[in-house]
Image (cartoon, rainbow, N blue to C red; front, side, top):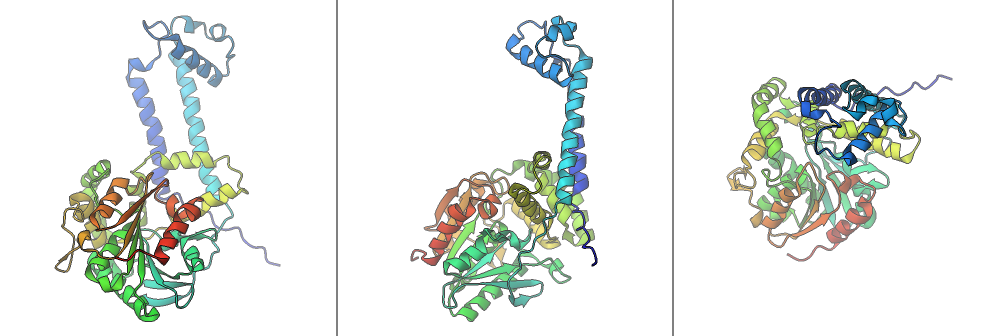
Length: 431
């Protein structure tokens, strides 16, 4: 019998080189700040320095240096007058080295984990270029609903696992359920603008579902997919009977100042890369996401270092990290529009987004609308999504205690998001 080879090591977290360098840079900057400031040294004889601060510090340093916590003065007589730099540096260096070792151990544990996604995708029933509609089933005569994910990540975040699948829950609840999978840009799609995706993919997909089922579909848009779903609701109200928005950004200047400064500073480099490659690469997009919280990856993987690899927690961690690292490029013209017009000039919220000659104005939406707004969202600030809900007449906004991804793939999502959302989709209020 031929032995089954071990699965190849994962390449993530992507971009791996950036995350490794970032962890090293954070440690270097910490040391640089420590060395450059005399005030960084905690003098025990400094007037006014409270012993309530010194005693815990002495105990901490004594422990890190392997000394006796009960008798710090006998171990370090110099503490009676001044805290010596040498043992202080030794303790900090020891701790920094341990942090880096834990980070690397966490990455190695993730890369070698045996989990591999085995959930099978449903059949494709329509194609337009690389885009396709996947049929998740449900009663044949039931109300149809099309789920529209973001352009910048794989669509299966809405079908991550058997017990955390908004799409399978939708079909099981009695809705005729379809997913628009944008696919990775091919030769043609690399030239696409946002308008091309709307006119050439999204609207034809809705037309297909209406023709196939004989009913006007409901639409659920997640993240940037929700923003794009605004366009057909304005342009073709005959194709959208109800609209649900999940963390859909609209006001791109709300809570994004740091990201906008970074984009503006990086614009010359980004423009050169987009022109050379024709797309915003996966690693470029991941690097931009990492800039929202530069310490997040380090914290996650240090925490994962000591997790039992056979545990449910480990499987769920790897399951989600695999999706995060399984990105798709973004067409160059779309990237330029989103980076520089949407984030840079806030075109959607300022009335500057047009498809053809038509302003995409949420106030023109007439169908019932429900907006879910995660309160702990770092990718789409809550006020950005609220601005969209507030601009749609009669829209109902619901705040949920989740992050951007947790609202669709977290352990609490089925009970707190799926169930009420699907109940609303089955019986949306009359417009």
